[in-house]
Length: 326
Image (cartoon, rainbow, N blue to C red; front, side, top):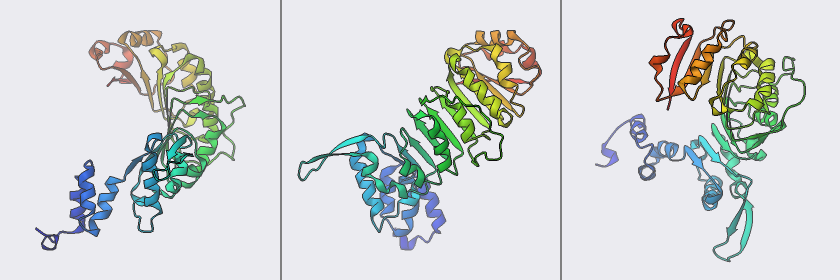
């Protein structure tokens, strides 16, 4: 049946195309049906774009699409994964056989036109790209050395709300932390997740985002606790959620009270344990929450016997809940 005989509103066609969001071939075919189907088809087809060192040809093709006066895909791109943007790539001209070296970003300089990108993943800091993508709300940095540059990154992304740092190294902040002055930066960043990284940069984070409300740290090494303590002393009153998982699951219960003391607005404390026996040892310490009765979530392996841990007084008082990790 031809489309001329099916008089449906565009909204219904869009809803039908939405069901094809994970079928790349069907989306490509839909985009060729008629002009009114193009926006919905391209929205799903180009919603997420990933480029790497092995996709130099794809990067050049994307750049050609963005450079075309008939190109309309830029508004559809919501998520951009761009690792190794500054890494050199060896390119061979198929016509002449000539070999030349360019960075991935040099192959797709028009990436700066992707003004609708909301989620960005990088493994280095391509400043021309960062300065142009003003609407990024979620930023993931991997394998980057974090220091003063963190302050600059947050400053050039005014809409940034969530920051994830995965496997980063750090330049320690050694100065005195005072973030209560009137010249504190204005930023929307309120959620920070740190995975498998040194946290020696937390002083820089306090300067960049003094009003962050949620902090999550996994693989927290005991040697880095001094940086966490300095951080909560500076911005603790702003924190509402604190999520901690120590490296190897070994908590130092003695250090928890000084960590929690500055967090006067804390609403949820989430602690990760590797075994039920660690939970028992934690509560055996006693009194950790006597002066800070915020709700506590204990995260244990999925195989743990949660029912066997229901005898603690804190649980009976309704201050503790258990969550099984996947």
